[in-house]
Length: 554
Image (cartoon, rainbow, N blue to C red; front, side, top):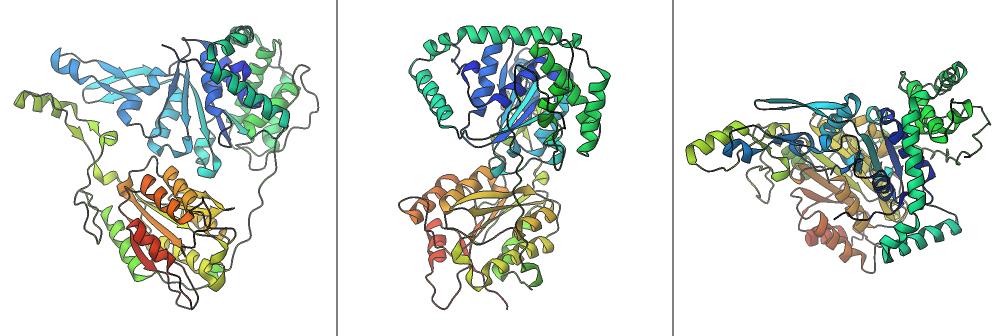
C-alpha cells in the first residue's frame, strides 16, 4: 500500500528548492542538491512529493545517518549461501536508489566514510561491491539530495563542493503565504486523497513538462557568448577548479529545456548562478545582468553575512587544567591507543568495548566455517576496535552569570590547553554553546584544532542558561557517533533559569532521556565569588556524573 504524499505542485514558499530538484531530474549529471535552512520548512516533504510526482519508476530511498556499510553498499545473502550453496548479493541503499532520489536528512551528521562512499558512487554512476570472494559492479546513478540545519554543524568544504546545487531555505515571513501553507496542510491531513485529486491536473501537467524537458535536453544550444559569460562569472567569484563552469552550463541548459526554449541565454545563467556558486565562492557576487526570462523572475536571495564576533583577550592569559580533568582526559586518550578498546572510569563500569548491531560487519567465511563445525547458522561478525575515534564535546554555559570573574576567559584557555596537550589524530572535538536563551552547535566534530580555537574565541557571555536545549543539541551532534567513544565536559555554574516551567528538572530529565547512555560525562563547576550556591554540584548529583571545580590559577 502506497502512502499518499503531499502533492509537489501544492508546496508553497519553496520555489528555489523545487526548481533545483526539478533541474536534477531533467539532468542527473548536475549531481544533486543540498538544502540548508530552518527546521520545519518542509524540506523532506518537498523531496518526497517530487518522487511521488515522477511515479514508481523514480524511487525515493532514504539513507539513515546511522546506517551500516553492509546496508549502504549491500551484502551476501547468508541464507541462500548456506542452504542453496550459491552466492546472491542483496542490494544496498545505493543500488536501490538507481535512477531515483537518494535522500539524506541531517547529512552533515553522516559519518565521513559513508559520505565519501556515496559521493564517489554519485560521481561514477555505480560502485564495486567487494566482499569476501565477491566482486560485483552495481549501477547507482541517483540524484543526491541532502538537507541540514546549519546550526547543527557545517559540512566539510570538499564535500560541499561535490553537490551540484545549493539552496538556502528560510521560514516564510509573508502572512498570506504562511496562512496558505498552513491551510493546505490542514486540508491534506483531513483528506489526503481528495487533496491530491484537487491537484491532479497540475501534477500531470508538471510531470509531462519535466519528461519533455528531459527528452529535449541534448537539443538545447549553448551559444559561445553564454559559455564566455559563465567563465567570467566563475573568475569574478574566484572559484577554484572547473566544476563550477561545467555546472553553470549544465544547470542553465536544463533550465532552458524546462522552459521549452531552444537555446540558453545569459539571463537564464544569471537566475541559476546562485545555486551553483553561493556554496563555492567565499563571497558570492551575482552576475551583472539584469535580464531575466519572461515567465519566471529570479527569487530574492539573502546575501547578508553574519559578522564575525571580536576575539577576546583570553589567549593572553596563562591556564592550567584542573588535575581531575587532566586525569579524565589522560584515561580517555589512552583508550584509543589500545588494540582492544576498554573504557574504564573511576566508577568502574564496562571492561570491554562491544559493538552494537549497527556497527557489525558479517564475516562470511568464518560464519560458514562455524556452520560446518556446529551445524548452526549463527552469524559471525568482524570488528576492528582500533579504528575507534575519541569524541570530546565541550558544552559551554555562556550565560550572563558567567561574565564576572573572568570565568569565560579561563574556560577558553582550558579548551585550548586540552587540545594542545592531546594532539592525537584520533581525537575529534566539538563545541556546543548556549545561544540567545537556547543553544547551538558552534563547531561540529573536527580534528582541526585551529577551527576549535577560532570558535572558542567567539564565545561570549549573554542570555540565560537553557541546559535542556543544550543537551538536545549534544544529542543531535552524537547521532552518528558511538556513545562509548564520547567524553562530554559541561562547563556551567548550574544556574539553570530557562527552558520550561521547571528548568532544572527538565534539564535533568532531558539528559537522562537522550544522553543517559553516556559513560564519560563531567560537570565542571565554573561558579565564582565568595558566596557559593553549589548548583553545579547539585546538577552533577542529579545526573549521577563526575564533578570537578574549575579553579583559576591567577
